[in-house]
Image (tube, rainbow, N blue to C red; front, top):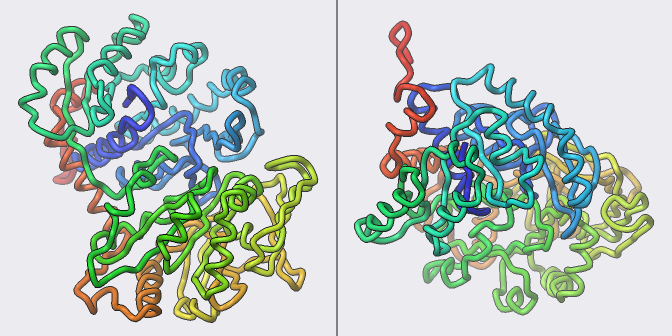
Length: 510
């Protein structure tokens, strides 16, 4: 089990890297996180919703994602409430106190999922949540030390040196653990290290002496393009200057960073064009949006469509987007963003806000949406028959992905929207499909079309390389595994879990 001193200490990536290492060494491995709180989610082939981080880890392990890997998913709808999803299905919206009492009932679901995974795998790599030292939440814990005890898992404790105070993080966490919990911690890992390791070594010796736990590794700061779990992602913190394209290029795509942004993993595919003339930014202020002068604006998914639509108006971003579209700028909405681009979004049942709430949309698509209690979760694969205008290059292309939305969208004709895309004009498009850009050359086609529109070239013409997105992600998992092999004491880790470093060959094969 990988636990951390805080959120975003690097648990998800380290778990993914260990999954890839165990896979490479011949072991059948699967990830597990009993309870995930995140707005980045995924729909499995059988229509169940789960956290995106475990999907990423499953990819690293070379196995198909299953809701067994994440039996509980909490999707925040406000500062105090979350949608509770158990075994891939919504059970309720709860505030924090109600859920704290309710989660005791979920132990059987957690254990059943874990046992099913265990029966089919040699190794389970478990990811904790937040910190095990949140002593106010120790009672009925089902995600950190409480889970480690239930499944009898040894623990690696990870600290983030990039934020500072890593020795205090690790020693303070150990000090706040009960003795039985502390005994489960078999190794300490310092993550996101930059600099000369020899300067850190005196601190490591004292850390081991004070903590009475060996340091199992110091992992360097890594620049990888893999899906992030939640809004603590470093993607949002990167400045425009850091991402500025080289001179002579300059295709600029901007995603609106909504307060309840969800599934921003939809845009990971654009990372493969880093350094090739694409500026991809997340913006949450109207003056920055206007100053950027983007070529395309995307309104992403949201866990609170009406709330985020109101925020768009209050922040001035709504006016900036409609002005941009009015001048012919390319605008796209995905899922909740698609709903916001329409004429009206209504909530008759009180799914997101008060019953009977109704909010006027941006008016860029001739659609209306009624939010409904029943959530649609399904994988889709469709061909785009016609998109027209700027989006004409999409005609005949296949798109595949998944839908996660509560609501029915009606076209101007009164028919229910069922297609992959809907265009309101030559420069505005909406879709319910998450992962829309991942298939084939769709992402590259968008960037090239935007470049052509402003009279520049992008791609093979100017020496840029094209990478298949799946192959690109595989290369990132391998790079992660290679880095961890060099920085972690894998001999000790194999000893901790009681397995040899390589699975014995059978009949000449591993």
